[in-house]
Length: 214
Image (cartoon, rainbow, N blue to C red; front, side, top):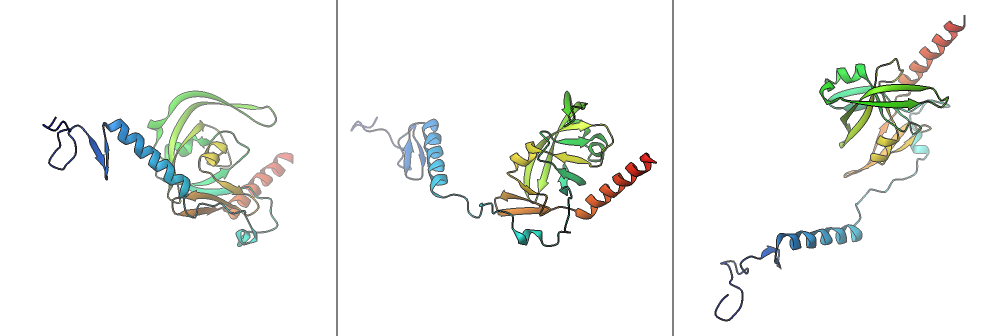
């Protein structure tokens, strides 16, 4: 204490033992952090992110789409450090699934952890997966850690992204317009589906079914 009874001050004029942020002074770091958190929350409430509004899909979104169609929504996506094609966007799936073969191609086997999971179909059939992996997906600059069940089976798609990824990304998918839209720090981004690849898969599947029936 100084002779006048006031707190001793540093050369910068701040009382010793106090912390400053701008012109404000705080008795301890916790008080300063709490004040900053309140300030950030207040700014977020009065200054919402710019250009983050998701618009409804419209006729313009159907430009380039082959119509009429009944195609699934299949995209390409960077997973780990690999451009993975034949990625099915499936709001009907509660989990994400990646083929073991594709996982090996990404060279991310070290990330696999043993975990048993039962996948049930609409006909009550079930498939048992024994491994789980969390890989990073890169969608137009938006990076998310994506937990997936590892499946060692034959499947038309290399990866299935279900509601876990869709909700985490705030994705609005449209099979009709063959596009997914999602917010990013730079505005609304979109990835278009690959109808030609989807139709090629369906053609092979239809041909196989017809051959089996002969």
